[in-house]
Length: 227
View (cartoon, rainbow, N blue to C red):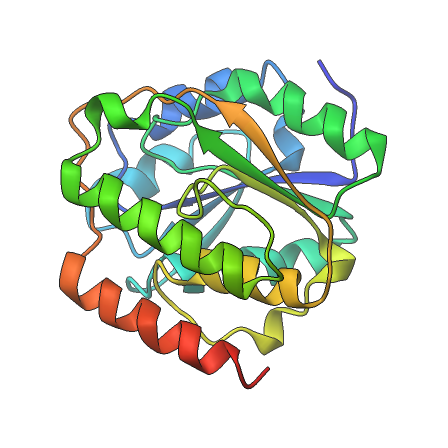
């Protein structure tokens, strides 16, 4: 067990009743439960009832506001609570808790501000349109974030130094929040590094809308030129 009290594990969830209890159990092997926050973004299934029985901190939105909004609420809590770093991972079970040790090792080296998971086996199970979308957006984000090569900009398994982030400057409420974070930190010349991870895909359904989220991404990129 890593007795580390300045790193918060933040898990945004929406209708993850089938996965969240097992995920928290696995995470507790690597970090104390009091440093784990489950951010319930207005789940309509039994997720809320399940997480209330777990020995972790819980924050809840009354209704679904989007992944970006959930992450922002969690970031504001982390800053107020005095944490120095946040590690985020998705609540659907695809992100394996064993990589927490790799993130913590890089954090302790103190040579980076943003750590991004790079899913090594994503082409095995990810639909073709998602592979193309992730590849294209990753190249665009790389170019617009200070020409830093990012291979997997859409991965939600990441860690970031909190004193590099002002939650009030973010505008994205949905999935584009994660791209906005890379763009903003890259433009601020923060140090960005990738960590190779493997993912475990089940029968989870992606909430990403190909056309709608692509349009929002394009708007985000153009808006980033004004920052």
